[in-house]
Image (cartoon, rainbow, N blue to C red; front, side, top):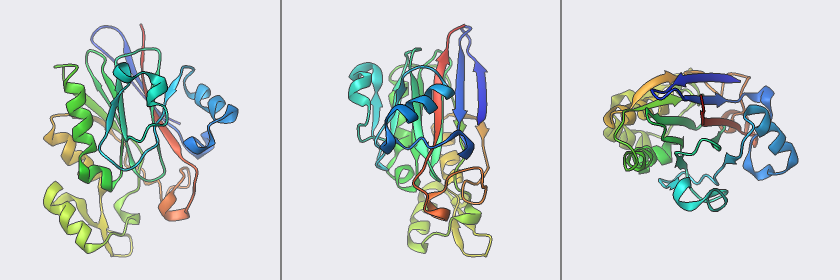
Length: 229
């Protein structure tokens, strides 16, 4: 498991955890006692989880209620509550944990489709409706360009929007997408400070599940919550 802890100005702390293969399967299709036990082993509080659809919807847990948000079709969620954890499940897409200095947190699932339709923008704008404080981010493990061969037409379109940094090459020299570069570009445009950019590749590192490289159905989780002082 990968760990990130960060103190807030009011004495509380941000906690971010990204699981690995050895921590087990966190795919939401297997909701039940075993999954709940794995979640509680990461952080012992209720998890907010979504039915991720590669879209641009960010749900406000405080406004809608945790039971309404559970399993809803969306790719980001946010809260100010300190007794729940926000989660994203991935097996190559980019998980992003966001927070403000006064304790608004969000979790974002950003594959290339979600990146293109504006899921990061939606999450950040939703957070800024709740706070004027600076925003920070942890970018979790995802597929690297060395393993992400990509179609030229889609690559050209994404390059026009997110800059030349998204164009790369695979380890065999084929055109590739650097989706993490797109995420970095979007966060910079939105004024979000990146505190951690985890560059491990889920496709070629055996410690992670990968849908693209190994057609695996299992998922790792990235989780963010607020720890009281």
